[in-house]
Length: 72
Image (tube, rainbow, N blue to C red; front, top):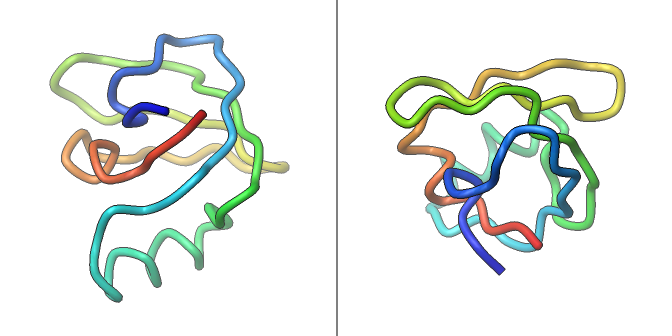
């Protein structure tokens, strides 16, 4: 298990947990990022947003929030 911020582009991962409070969880859940969902890291910059493809959507996740998303 590792933080989403450490995953290289092109990898498919499964969301395991979100290491954040109710507000962070609610925001991510509303975007379709719920425990058990599989998604692909499309683009990753060391300081900028991380682009992910989840279901039929593309999402940009800030680096700080990506550090709270635990994937496998």
